[in-house]
Length: 404
View (tube, rainbow, N blue to C red):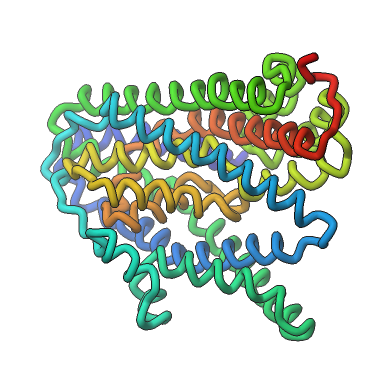
């Protein structure tokens, strides 16, 4: 019987860590496997960004006229909740500093960032040559181009529109298929990455403590976002009872947590929002599926914390502009990222690429990703349900969870 992928990854993590601690002299003979895996992920960065953003944006723009007003409100609310999550993560990771104290021969690098000032950022977003941006993995220009294409494709003639939308959707499906094939090899790549990380770290226990601090930072951030910011928005912004809403969502939240998948919880989420909270099918059937595609509060928070943690571990002090890039990229990558296999791993490689941090830094956080994946999936689903409630209130619906 073949083990599930996450169990294969857990075994490779344990084996890689053990081999790195006990047999560090063998690291050079194995590390190339990790380099190959990181190269494969890097190879997929541009097509994933471009096709997912074009498909996601064009799908939203192509929505029927009767839903565009609701769509704009819903997207605005999703952006608001993700921004709150990102700010929470950035504040916590800079206060707790979970990555400080990790040191190794390979963990002192200079961030090879192309955009060093506001001027450079603004100019660099618009490339002189589109194909140069694609070949050099310049993420921000690709995001801009994907957004522009996604906005304009639905507005051209029907023949051209249908042909291009089919092309981009096919490109996205092809990219996802190749990504799945790369992910199948992730246990081998992760074994090599972890072996290299542990083999080059002089103090094993310091690394373990820092990883636990990283988990604690993410957990606190997710809890603050769920039980403070979203609760305050519901209570004072939209006059509904956040505790009753949370109880009503127990089934989809437990489903998302146990499966580590917001997609698996989608049927339970639709049922709970409509039947327990009393939201109309019109609102429910639009906001929840849209949220499962573009709203990732938990993932956005985690990616920000993870990238700053990796920068701290490598001794790189990110400037305010680089930190801003991390936040913006986390937000933009959420569009269409729900369909990416092992989305956290792929999204993290995208963001690391933006600020010039080495992709092998993923090895510092991948070992604890499974438990965090369960928690962030639950937060992603809860964020979707909260926005559904907010959208319903903006449409003047009366709900059983209203505060009288």
